[in-house]
Amino acid sequence: MRLRNVALGSAALLGVLYALLLRRRVLNWGATDIEAVARLPGDELLEDADGVSTRAITIDAPASAVWPWIAQMGPSPRGGAYTYDWIENLLGLNMHSVARVLPDFQHPAAGETIGFGKNRMRFERVEPEHVLAFRSQDANWVWAFVLEERGRQTRLISRNRFRLPSLAARIGMAPMVPASLVMERKMLRGIKARAERLASPGTMPCMQR
Image (tube, rainbow, N blue to C red):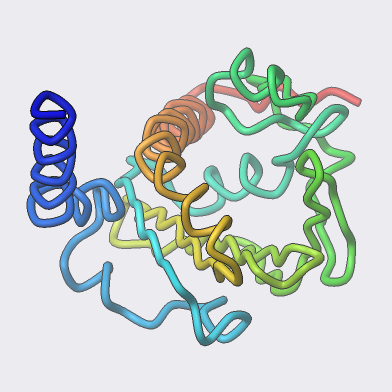
């Protein structure tokens, strides 16, 4: 009994420390304090969110070199998500990250849908080289990418907003928050590397049908 109480107390303490010291950093990796609290395009698609993450990265390339990788994201035959494919495919997502621009998927349109496992995601807001926002079929998840050109660089911001309508959903989300950081950080870095390579002088986009 005493050991169990100690274990429960330790777990509670770790939970408090995580909430106070790490949760904000996990949710807002790479984002400035201003970006983390800013109202961004796509926020209007889910106003009363139970949780929000804002992650960002600076890319040494214009938005025109970043947009192609955002536009073609999704399960095969689309371009993947530029993260750990093997993890995503354990979940049945059929992701295969490519290192080339796919011309057939460069023009997403509002109203089109793509599958993310059990989630069917609908393009809700499409502004080439500026905004791409998805919303899940059950309307409990919105994922938006915002591109902001700053001189010769582009700031890429990934904003997730989600609603947790049940206790089970709230409990299930707890381990997903740090796990999502691992995946999304890899994704943002993957987009950065691809965009900078595409924008390099003398580099021609490798486009395949």
